[in-house]
Image (cartoon, rainbow, N blue to C red; front, side, top):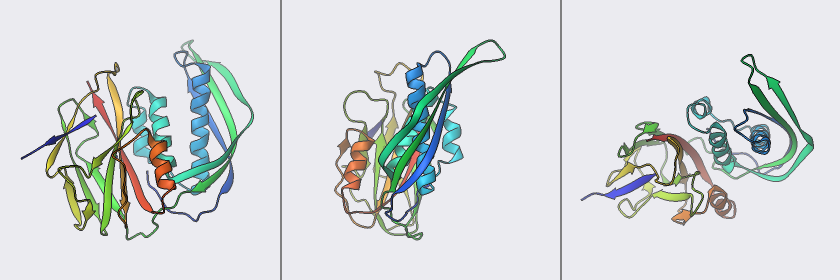
Length: 266
């Protein structure tokens, strides 16, 4: 998590608002530490991600996929990425075709590998985004790996004036809200960006800390970035990404979105 101490993050695109019917597959391999139900839930998430990619042409960067294999809880990482990626699309209907295929394989070392495969039919509708290539931004974090007490900073480059908002996403939280507005804040109030490049924080300090209730050795968190050509009255907190997504879908505003993942180690 981040503390804002007072001083003195796939590629997303825009598409026409037309739902598309797609057929998609999801396959998940796991060991006995994960239940069959959770394995099939993860297979369904992969099928939904496959449907999103086929429905709107969105892809998750290889950098993000590779990072999932480096942190504790690969399935949780993939699930988080799915929710972030589908901020760009909405499922109006999902149908699981036939029953999930469940099977086991014996590995060369004698261990048992469990596999669940799911096929779905889905109606995927793109969510409105700003499609002007001249309305864009790029984000670079000072690191993707942090220890408690480290400071997080970011450089953001812009090719257009825009209203810019950053949310911190804490997907591991089981109680309370998971999404918090990081920028603008009480020390950095103006989010209308006219500069070509800014460095955040500029009037505060973003300090990383490890949440006490988490027993794992490391966790992944996300920064979710939104640029808009009109001001949007975002809430300071949302229960989860679906809550934020619903607020955005129901508004008349169009935005450009990106995200960055980072890991905190004890």
